[in-house]
Length: 160
Image (tube, helix red, strand yellow):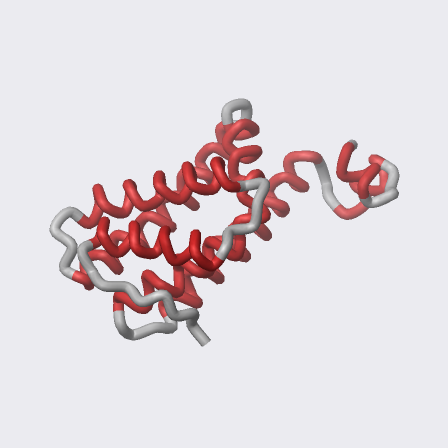
């Protein structure tokens, strides 16, 4: 209803495009997963060097932070919808798998634990900073934290 109001559409008009609320939720989730997981991973994978992959991933997720609340919303919704819960878990597994593989390429001793720690770091950082744009100094600082966590020197250069 809130989306229909925001789009200046009727609730019934919304269902013209979707068979049901569940169909709408699945398609919305699929769109989000494509944009904020698969495209980000594909962009990071374009780098051959694993340290550059981490850097590119880092900058991409910092730029996408405007929709971070959507993941939190999905998690709350998934508490009531088992099918959606499976999709959220699969998406997070996909994210963690990519980071774990990249950390393995870097030779990180405990890549699974480190990938989970990095993901938790991002989620906590997002929650604490969601209402303000990160400064260049803050981005640089967080990149140094990631460097220390993974034991690899990461530059603060933006991917072109």
